Length: 434
Image 1 (cartoon, one colour):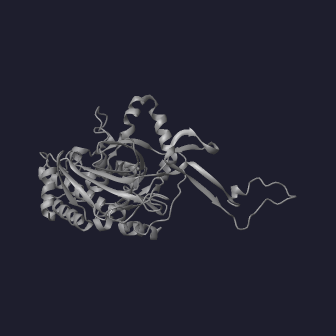
Image 2 (image 1 turned 135 degrees about the horizontal axis):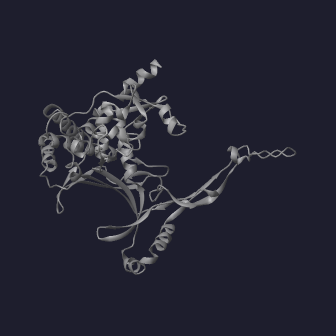
Image 3 (image 1 turned 45 degrees about the vertical axis):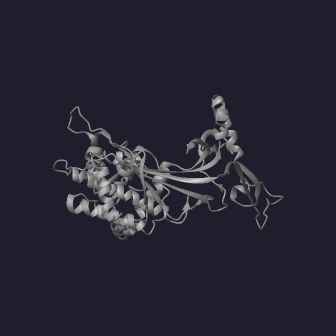
């Protein structure tokens, strides 16, 4: 199917009368470092472990796959995958002509793609556009007042919020009040995820033991904990210091041990809490939900709803999401963390287009094709429906005085990545002029 043909298929699916379910992408991976062991993320258990620190735990769960019951381990969560895809967005913002809203913190730029709460983040709340607090400025107020029925401002300034979800939880009453002294106040917008992805490892087939697990449901947590330990390999540590330093004799004892200074041997140890897990296979699973996109409407600032314009905006978001998935899964390897580099079993990235639950077709996601599809949709929305992303970077300054009134804080400011100067030339101009 060519670009125009697929775009027309998506337009029909994304119309108000569309019934197509969405697009699902599944791909199999294996660990690169060893071929069978992988390091999952660890989460706080809320319990004290070694050295008084919180005990890290991995997330094991039972999943039914193809009618069989499996023990699985989470390798990358839905929020983490959103962060990784948004990292692609900010790095390719110039190439894809995406909008950039950034808060300058010293010599670093925090964008809507980096901020934890996206365009609704407190970084933007505690920033200024010129001399005006951002959320009370015309642009900021427009963004806060937007919702799924008036999504044009969010589309214009932060399409990632429409793709990955957002909640205007940091909006204050002054910015959301509709009438001075009135009884009505604008509700805080909540936008659900239209695109989500996760990665999990298949540890063991538990189908032969399903009946036993059901009969012992009250002991299931203890049984799962035992199984997870069975498939976990402890992480070892050891390292020799070539100078083999030791505390000087005949002198006053130092207040700090050599190990606290980072000197001396790293003794051979086994860390069972943070070890690796042996997996049979690794599954990347993502979905682009048409039902979520069909909830978005894009009226002009002064005007009425137009169905074709709404569909055009939904199409841009859908094709942008597909392109991000295509690029991310075509890298050759996915780096999650130390000892968690994943290599695809197949170089082709196939997606399933679900017209109905039992009617699906295979679509190959090639970055060149998905980029052409996205450019086609974006051009159609701009030229035929007047719906476009903001082209110039919107540069804000952190209001440190206002933030200091709320709380004491210290920022650990990293070095500015080089791509920032491409996606926001104003940032470079401000840096040179300060």
